[in-house]
Image (cartoon, rainbow, N blue to C red):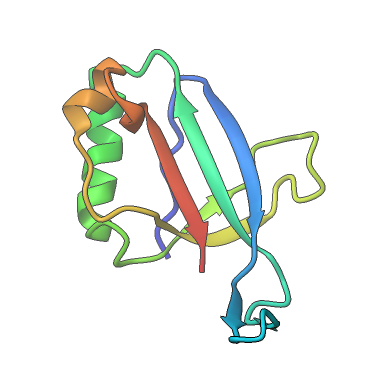
Length: 118
């Protein structure tokens, strides 16, 4: 399985647990909830700082090879302060499209990458 590339620039790292809950509302103001994922799915947000053109090209090619969010890949938790430090997660890109020119020059929110566990 492919692995997210190791890059030279620093990045801010955010890990968010996410659950899928279906909520059905009834006319009597009652709700019924169904937990579809008992274990959290994690969303990893990597915000790059000082991304070089070469690193931008590396991420762009990796993204294109994965066909956006089509193909999963391995991602290692880089946060030494987390309970999941060093663990491998199978993830996908969260979006099917990206503007990598904005990504490189940090003109828009695409200087960050969002990954979602499978």
